[in-house]
Every structure is written in C-alpha cells, then in structure tokens.
Image 1 (cartoon, helix red, strand yellow):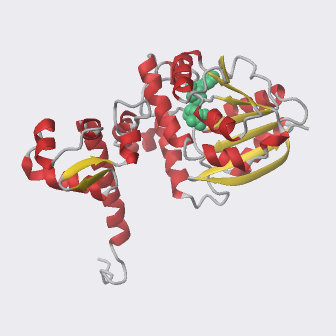
Image 2 (cartoon, rainbow, N blue to C red):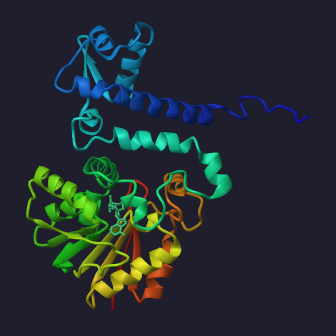
Image 3 (tube, rainbow, N blue to C red):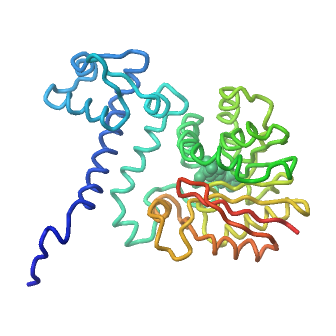
Length: 338
Ligand SMILES: C[S@@+](CC[C@H](N)C(=O)[O-])C[C@H]1O[C@@H](n2cnc3c(N)ncnc32)[C@H](O)[C@@H]1O
C-alpha cells in the first residue's frame, strides 16, 4: 500500500473547484429549464412568489435563488429577484438569443463520454455529411435553437474578428457555413464598405431572414443557399470559415480549403476561425474539451492545431499564412491565394 501524502502537499482545492463548476452549470441550466429567467423577465418577484409560481419546495428555493444571484444570473434588491442582462439575453426562452436548450442538449451527451471514448463514435444518431445537420435540424424552430447556440459562441469572437484583419484590403466577403449571419453582421457593422454574403444549407434561410430583421439588416447581407461540398462557394475577395472545419474529418477539411481556393480570385484571402489546440497539444483546456465535444457530436470532427491548418492550406496552394488569437480560445488563421 502506498503512503498517503499530507494534505498540505496535495491540496484538493483544484479538484473541488472543478466539481463545483459542474454544480454551477447544473444550477443555471436547471433554472432555465424551470423557467426562472422567462418568468422573471419584466416581472421582478420575491422568493415566496417565485417558489409558488414555479412549484418549488421552500426548503431549497432560497438557496437556489441566492445561488443564482451569486452566479451572476439574478440580482436581489429589497427582496425582489430579477434577471441580470446576461440571463435576460441568453436564458429567457422568449428571446431568439435563448441558449438554454442548446446548452442542456450537451448535458445528456457528456454523460456518454465513456462510450464515446471506447467506441470513437458520436453519441447521437444524426449520420454524416450534410445529414449531420439536416437530420438533426428539421424544423425552423430547431434551426433557431441551434443557430442561437452558434451566435452565443461566435458573438464572443465577431467583434474581435471585425478588427483583427485589415478589411479595407477587400471589398467583399462571404461567410461560408455562416449560419444565420451573426458573424457576417458583426463584420459588416464595423466595415460598412463591404459587400457581405452568407452561404449555408437551405434550411437555415428562414432563421437567417428572421435574424437580419432583428438586427435591422434586412437586404444588407445576401444569403446563398447551398451545400459547400457539392456547390461552388460564392466568389468574394474574402471567405470566412468560422467553426466549420472542426465539424469535419481531415479529408473533408482539405476539400473545403480547396473549394475556397477555387472560389477566391488571385490575391483573395481565406480566414479560418476555430478553437485551435496549441501546437504542443498541452492546451488550452477550452480547445481540448471542445475537441472532445466534437468527438461526441460528429463522426470525424475535432479541434486541430494551427500547424495542421497551415499544412492543408499550403497543400491547396495558399501562401502568406499567419495565425493570431481571437480570444475565447479561438485562433484566426489567414491565408492568401497567390
Ligand atoms: C458549427 S456551425 C458554425 C456556424 C457559424 N459559422 C459560426 O461560427 O457560428 C456550422 C455551420 O455549417 C453549416 N453547414 C453544415 N454543413 C453544410 C454544408 N454541407 N453546406 C453548407 N453549410 C453547411 C451548418 O448549417 C452550420 O450553420
């Protein structure tokens, strides 16, 4: 039997922090599921009132609501609880920006991590190729939930991407696999000289138009319905692929990069964003964990390193390849067609 190390040498605190991070996530998602944030939107309420309306037993209600205050999703003033701006925007189910359903769907999946690691198989039943998306998102409501989840992620990098590249060097950009146009809108809002488009599957078009109306950009961004493996990518001086390459295996990534090379004019640029893994593969944890998530939701997807990305780009003929951080564990790789 090995001797036990003294507690002052091996503090349990880092592990304890990870454990309570799970409690935090579960508390917030449970509140979303119970409708706490939707009920409180525009209607501040006392703990008693909320407990009655949401059918909560008094024993846990106060701790539950005060934990939500401590976690930054509610405020409590003079005994009245209300949503913080964060909860109002992302956790009120009446808003198009609601991500409760998107985040909750990951919970069930992560319970199947052992299975995914043993088999290498995704823990869903959505098939591969475009079916991975079209089978899963059959209705406009399903596309709305999914694209809201995408915007929650691309919203953290959009404003940075809109400044990180010299957009004055191009006059047009198409966001390939650009979902409901949120990232394209962020680029356009800071670079109004650009002609902007989005290519995505035809099923996305209704939520694209909905989102453009919400952003008061109707008619300002063109939607190109298509399958980026089958149809040519729209021509523009710049193409963006954000959170697209990580959905696919290496052969498909090479095909997408080659497709972009074909669509770009000489001198055109391709901008690739993903939560990339450091070249030494020791971090960041956020990118490595997203990679495990890709294991569970796609047949061949994963995160990858800037070095791997550079090799696919070089093979396709791109030059002047550079990489920079976009924050939120995301890396931007830019490459030019000679
Ligand atoms: C992970 S999401 C990323 C969305 C967006 N670029 C972002 O950064 O939030 C991948 C996108 O690729 C689109 N997509 C998947 N397969 C496609 C295909 N074969 N042709 C065109 N778009 C596709 C999906 O509909 C989805 O909007």
